[in-house]
Structures are given as structure tokens and as C-alpha cells.
Image (tube, rainbow over all chains, first blue to last red):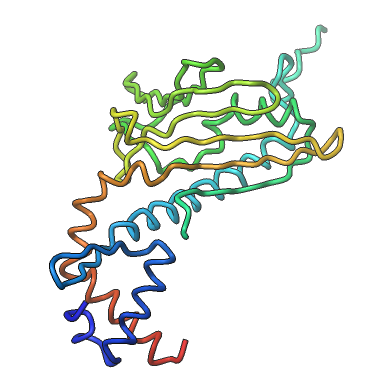
Length: 87
Length: 157
């Protein structure tokens, strides 16, 4: 925590408060090591995965909605060429 | 708390039964194409319509990639399948490290269906993130993050 505070233009207690917010939001995990508190960003990586999948499903469902609204490709597919007329 | 879940809802102008079958039978037609874990281009994506079945991609060269297990198949109500894809888009063989997707088809009118998708237990992919997290801790990970954080603070956000 001290290392983080040293790199920021704010007070140590401000950093502590912000880390608490981040922790409550699930973005960092906290671990005590002696008198030090170690923060890890691992859950942020999960958040990144979540963002990635959110985008994935948004795109998939948008395309899906277009397909589902169309005439279904059931037994008689509408995209088939019409039967040739017998002359 | 940030939940390790993605929820998406979309309303389609289609009856429930049609909405269900469009999802399971045409999955390969609407999933984003660039996500391919095969070397070969995908010729077909198959959604096996039964519990114990798989969703798999078949490449043009005949190779296959099974990336989901069908956990529930209840037409026209819902389908549940596992997401056996790790964070870096590789197939995950350990079921304990996989998430799952449930899709529910809720009729709003006889001609309109609300499709509710929930991709949950994303945190189960966690262990696979160790290396990524370590990367975040060095180089342009934490320092960049902190720089942005500082910008936010400076901006009074």
C-alpha cells in the first residue's frame, strides 16, 4: 500500500480509502503480510474477461435477433430455388 | 460487489418455440466469427440438442473443437451449456475451471419472445488468470493503471 501511495500525488489515507472502494467493488483483493497489506489485481482480470464476454454476447445476440426474426430455415427452406417449371 | 456474471437480454419478434430453435440450430450463424480455436477456418458449428451433447466447431480440414457441454436442454424454455474456454481463448479441459451459460426464452406475446442470457461463474476461470495478473503487476500494468487512476483523481472524478 505504501508503494502505491508513494507513486500517487495524494495522501496515504486517500489511497487507503480508494483501495477500500476498489476492494468493495471487487476489483482488487487484499492480503495481510505482517504489517503490510498486499493488493492484487487478479479480479480485475476477471473483470476484463467479463467485459470481453459481454461484448461477445452482445454481438451474438444482435445477430441472433436478426436471424430469429427471419423466416425459419425449416423443412421447406425459403432460400431454396423454386422448382423448375415443367414445360 | 462486482459479480462474475454477464447478463444480456434481447427481445425478438418471434414465437418462443421459433426463438428457441433459432438459437440452438443456428448458433454457428450468429456467434462472432473471429473466435476460432481451430487452425482451420470453421466450416460448421454444431449444437447437439441433448443433455450430454456438445457444442463444437468443425474446421474445413475436418478437425473439431468441442468447447461446450450441454447441461440442460428444455425446449422451448431454456438451454444451459458449459463454457469450456479459458481467458485466452483456449479449450479448458478441467470442468472446475469453466463457467456456464443459461439462456431462457420467455414469451411476451404469442409473437414476441424475451431472450435472457446469463453467463455465470466467470470467477471459476480465475486460476488461469494468474500469469495474466502477474503481467498486470509489472510493466504497463499497474503503473499504467495508477497513472489513469491519478488522472481521475486530478480531474476531480
